[in-house]
Image (cartoon, one colour):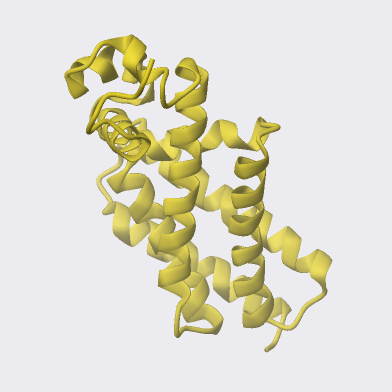
Length: 191
């Protein structure tokens, strides 16, 4: 069967990302997506290998988008400013694209070469920003990147699930946490 005219992989992924962001990742099914696109479900098989293939493509799109946001946030910055900027960009991405962000999480447990490659590029970007910001051994950089990712992911996940109920501004909280994290780094590693 030949692909439907006007239906392409990019259109499918964009619509799937929109559905995920609006209604959660679990709402993305071949049936819901085909209904949104105005096609029959079998038409999607010309572009993706079932629901698992669709979710892999969605994860790839999400990781590439997140990488792009962090890269742009770090551009022209250095030191604390660069680390702070990528932290805020990470949270902003998770807020603006909650379903797409959620789609990126299973990418850590995949054998898909493309997903592994973009995941590694994302980690290397954060490592590079940290390594250039502070004079430290590679092993120390990795420890700090793990902490950074834990802060960002934990904050994004708790915020998305409504886990922050106390009456303190969330933007102020993430900025406070980032500043405190960076102060700790500066106390231990001088650039």
